[in-house]
Length: 224
Image (cartoon, rainbow, N blue to C red; front, side, top):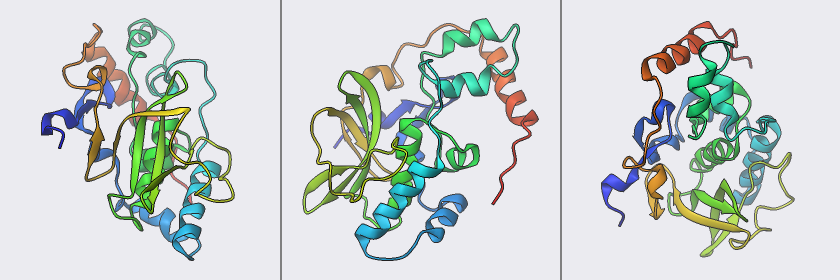
């Protein structure tokens, strides 16, 4: 078992330390709403429907920057905010399922977290995980579902699901560091993600003001 302190990862704004298991949220309102909208059927059919929903309804942010999410959230205002916040783009920000559904876009970690949250409504905690690691040499996150002891990858950045959830077994080019859901963490969380990781110097007060302004002034509303 991994020591409790090793579950702590800086995945929120400002490198805020949180338990990584908090990200997978099977029982929030929007996750319930999406899950209840899916067609019923066999376990395989429900898994496939959830996978296809995430692929079709969450857009991958088109950007060459390391983390489009920070630029989208923090750099709304062009001016004195830009320079200090560009320093901050070395850090990922992983969104909760409700945030991803509300925004309508998300990168690999966001869509993986959303899909695993949906699948946790029908699968036990030992069968579905968000894996974080490398795809070839690039950092990546993806869902893994286990069936009869074999893990299968449900790539959540596709534009649509494959014809079956059981087409891509675990293995190269996917190289996981660790995996988690709302109850369990498996593997070794890298030091650069953990609480003990190095934090770059930037103006915390200015950054927090920009975050609060973005959410307070945002005109986006959730529609059904």
